[in-house]
Image 1 (cartoon, rainbow, N blue to C red):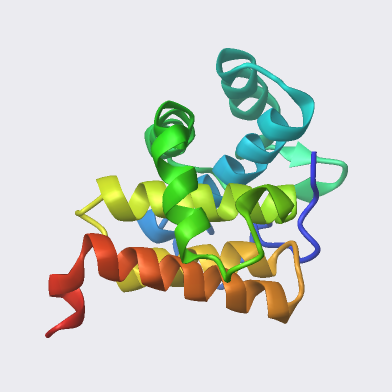
Image 2: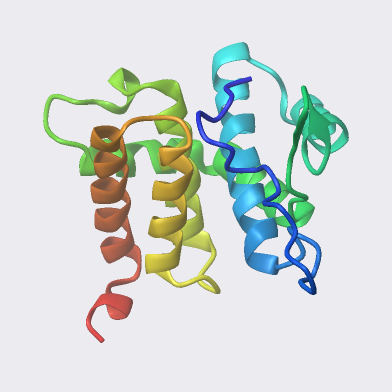
Length: 174
């Protein structure tokens, strides 16, 4: 399992009078995105199957304390949608990402965690029209920040922005 370099999924300290941390839908979706990227990475590197990956993440990681860190609860259906959608559509998503990458940088050459981020983002841009494209791009850039340095997050931003404009051009003409 790739650990985020920042405490992305950890609960912030509670504020007096606030709802419990992680209660907001956006927090649960952000946690689901991060968990989905970690699951896709694990499947890519370790060859784990989707059912085993779902079972592991839902029982041991999402919303649990792991090695002293408390992870935010994630929207399970959203997590499953992203992971299963990427697995199902990977043969369509990879050429889209390849085309958006700079010449000479095929997807196979990109670090596995960044491949997972871009695949999840591309899937969401194509299939989750209920979420604005700019939000999707921003969320996956944030996920990438949890694992890599700024240069690579810039690449994630550029690739997902190009894919967003391809799938949702109308959102960028307003």
